Length: 168
Image (cartoon, rainbow, N blue to C red; front, side):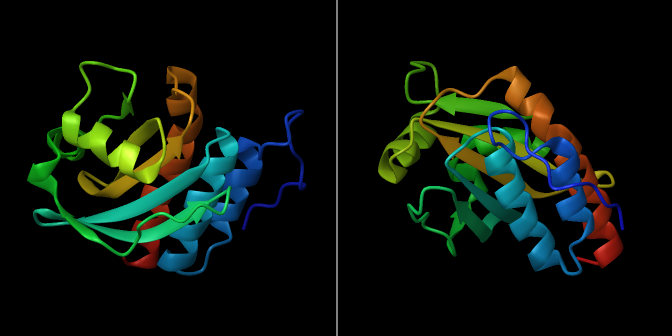
C-alpha cells in the first residue's frame, strides 16, 4: 500500500497523491467506490458525487457522497437510452460536462440537474480494461472545466485497475 502524508493543498482540498493513497487503501469494491466519490468531490471542490454501475441497458446507482449534506437520490436505476449524452459517454469512454446554463445541453440531463438542485455535472466513465464498468457523476453549482477533468482522470484510471484486482 502506498503511503503519503495527510497533506492538503492551499485551498484545503485533498491532493491527488492523498486521493490515490485513499483508493489504494480500499479493501473492497464498495469501500473503493466510496473513497472515489469522496476523493473526486474534494479534489475538484465539488458538492456531491454519484457512482453508478452500467449493467446492460441500465445504470444503477451504487454510492453517493455529499460534501454539503444534501442527499442525492441514490439507489435508483435508469434506462441508459433515456439519457443520450450519458449513453454516448458510456459508449465512447469520453467525459462530458452538462450545465443548466448551456442552451445546447441535453434537456433530460438539465431537467435532472434542476431536480437535484445543481447547476453542473461532470460525467466521467469508469473503465476496466477495454470495458466501461460504470459512471462517476460529480455535481456542483459552478461549471466544471477541462482542468477538473484532468485532475480526476488519474483517479478513474486507478479505480479501473483496482476494480479488476478486487474482482468486481
